[in-house]
Image 1 (cartoon, rainbow, N blue to C red):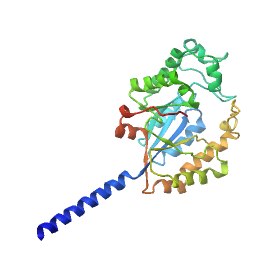
Image 2: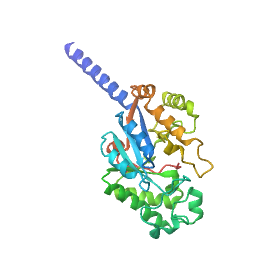
Image 3: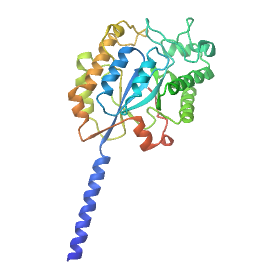
Image 4: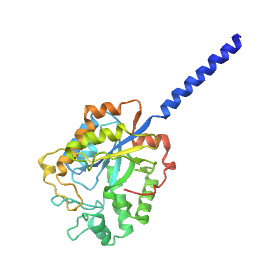
Length: 296
């Protein structure tokens, strides 16, 4: 009898252990990605508030922009952040423009008559950009980020321009393979609306509801465009008709929603597990990336 009792106890132990492991596996992974770091000082200030919260987060830097040096120095100080290069081929603000890192003479098909990137994807590709020039410029942005001392974990793409078509996607994939980094949305991430287009006063409620109602299946990706509602950002006017009006207020509202006590408490719920791209690279491996069916 003692033998069977011992076996029974051992079986119960295994069942308990399996239940614990299964519970761990059932946690819903959430990846928070903040875009446009280095775009301006107010975006960097907003990113600093997020970084200070200490949770795992991914942040994408815009290397061609004037405030990239500040963003790079800031990001190097935090262990909870995974850094990506926000591959940039557009410059969308009327009063604040930027151009190629590689130099206008090396990539003339990527710029307008003043040497700035085009405001939209459609204007860029209407100009029939040379594919080799696209690769030259994207490579220059990655190299500059590395020279600034950043440890790059992933690539993503400002306004989707670098993922415009099969040929440009292949360039990004080639660079990711060469630099041994991942690409955002190549780990089967499932996009979750983070409140970008929600009214300013409803962003927290929208974000909270969307996260609270998450179901199992894939890594949940929430992309944020944060900022501080200061005169710098207030002065920026989107040259694209599809751009949000009162952009500064929208970005500030996204920041406040993300760092709010209510949302932080929800994200700490045992149902969820916060991850960043460095963690995914370590756990899943870039060799297991797969091109998604569609790109955003």
